[in-house]
Length: 201
Image 1 (cartoon, rainbow, N blue to C red):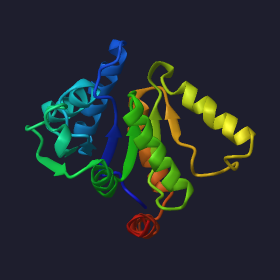
Image 2: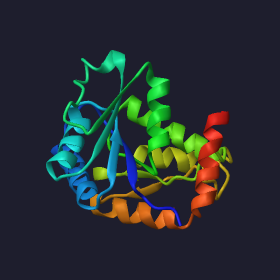
Image 3: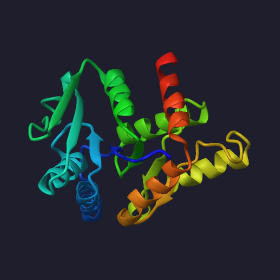
């Protein structure tokens, strides 16, 4: 059985217009810390990223920040984190985040959050990993993406039963239990074998 020890969270470097998004980030940070699940994230102190990582640390949890060198000033690298990895570029950042994670969560965010999430869905569809992917659909933020995935499925661009479909939850409290349940369905050796194929992409 696969276990969730580390979660990679993709989220905005802005806070958005709805305070519920920041509250969700803080709640998720607290839950991860209380359950001794390490956070892997983009390494900054601004926006939802900063709220999330600060909450993990404030509740005694552990954080790995992964940030490209060119963003260390713009996104204000989090020096409080137990581990900060500065990468050469975005490609290396995404690879490191993938390698460190047992599962992926997308909180609200912008183009970068969307792109990172879609990449993990693409790799899952191609059989490159079996790590759970979850959309934290706070106040329906991800409804348009879910509708697009339904549209693609109806037009046979996504096959029914394809692993591209993420887990979708509306409540932060449901995130970790859903990830744990999904990971429990994947034998550990099978998960490691699938993850190793990323190196051959």
